[in-house]
Amino acid sequence: MPDVFMPRLSDTMEEGSIAQWLKAEGDEIHRGDVLAEIETDKAVMDLEAYEGGVLEKILVQPGQTVPIGAPIAVIGDGTSASGGGDGAAAPSASDRGTAGAPAAEPAATAARPAAEPAEPATPEPAAEPATPEPPAPAPAADGGGRLKASPVVRSLARTHGIDLATITGTGPGGRIVRADVEKLLGAPRPAAASGAAGAASPAPSPAASATTPAAAAPVATAGADDERIPLSTIRKVTARRLSEAALVPVFQLTTVLDATRLTELRREINTRLAGSGVKISVTDLLVRAAAVALRAHPEINASFGGDAIIRHAHVNVGIAVALDEGLIVPVVKDADRKSVSEIGSQAKDLATRARAGKLTPDEFSGGTFTISNLGMYGIDSFIAVLNPPEAAILAVGSTVDEPVVIDGEVQVRARTRLTLTVDHRVADGATGAAFLRDLTDLLAEPLRLLV
Image (cartoon, rainbow, N blue to C red; front, side, top):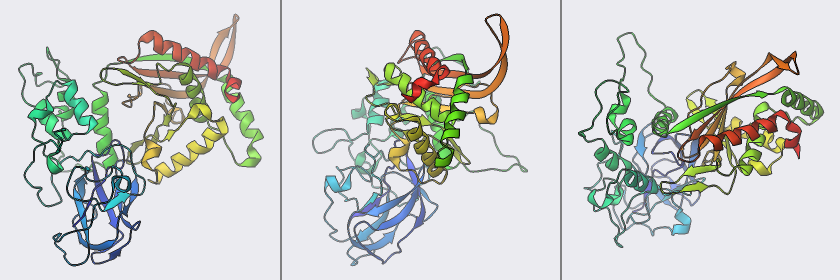
């Protein structure tokens, strides 16, 4: 009897919740039917059926959160409501994609997300499982002797010198999940830091500070008159990823942009395009300029790969969008190959659908550089937190008129402060400075962005 598993719908997703079931127990299911809406850390997405049958049992109710890979429903032939029976044939790898249960597991995946991610699922145990207790952990190797663990888990183990062969996986089918590795990293060590927050130890463990309970210290306790607001899915992921980002050695570079011509060009473009309904923002021009500069500086359009630096073939610029429940970064793919008007149109559409929770995984993953603009809030300058695995992020402040001495005379110019945060494992100060210099030059003479 094929189970329907909680699929992995984004590269940061570790758990998901059922927003609502669109089918009821006993309903006849056809291939491609939308079974439910699943809320992830980024959006609410449809879950489609891989094959037909009868929805015999719903295992997870709306509002409940379970780890990826956990069974959430059972689709059968209608002869059993308990999940027994011979079951239907498993879909092929091409049909199943990579969402849901790992291919090495005996159970077939009976449903798929409407937009399928390319990264293998990484199921992890929930603190309070909403589904029946899983069977006892099995050996973490498949029939061919290959350890069953995602690339994220393998990288974490390699970074800290942990032999995965010594770990008993607690995920489905004995799969080694992140929690299994973090349990070892969180074990007491001789060089543990003192109880004071932020105290350094002679040999600190990077992962221990962000992935163990110690990372949450100090944690506040709500008083009798305080309001306790549970973390949203997005906020949980934000907290985890920011803790991970804190482990990356970074440096910041700040410069002041003379944005006079940039603001004049934007005003002129919008005047000329007024009849078309197209309106260009400062962020659109920033995305275009950053993309052009990144193409000229591939050493910044890169990521840290453990034992190598990965220079990306595509320039994909993410734009930080603030939501009530957290932050999301939709990505303009191949931004260096798009015009300013194309970027503006796509960025507006992405931001609108991000606020509505309607982005697909492909639209908020694969970024190689991020821009965070808080200028519209009157913020003069700030430091943005790195968005791993990207090597750099640009923080943009407000544009203000300031007196500047030019050729011995005081003039009023529009000025904007830009701060670049860079992963020091990928690039050095001089490399980051060269990129920021060229980016600033492009923005100061923005006509070059239109050719």
